[in-house]
Length: 137
Image (cartoon, rainbow, N blue to C red):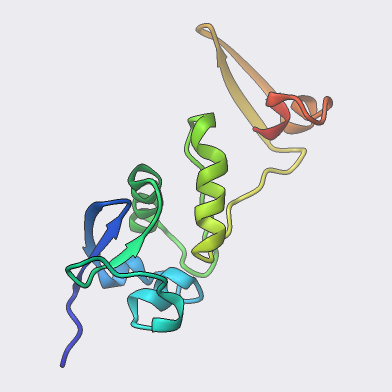
């Protein structure tokens, strides 16, 4: 039997559909392994037989959009959501699904909008106070 090109996944109770090609773009990921039918990597199915992932659907959509627009599959770079509340759960989901989040170097330049005023600085400036909220940008 030929595998369907369109795949349904139940993410946190919401059915999300995408193509098999998009969901398996990073072949080494656990997500690709699940989509390709490796049952050892699948922890649960819903009552309709869809793979069930216990994540916030908003986080999964963020991942899915990055997979859709990924330019170079050999050097994938993913970014967490802009909302600080979603960064930690996104990183956890990413780690569990076998992906890697891009990290910034001290020399990378950051642009901040503070009350409508634009500031441009290097990451090393923001990380001078190690456990401040700006240090985890």
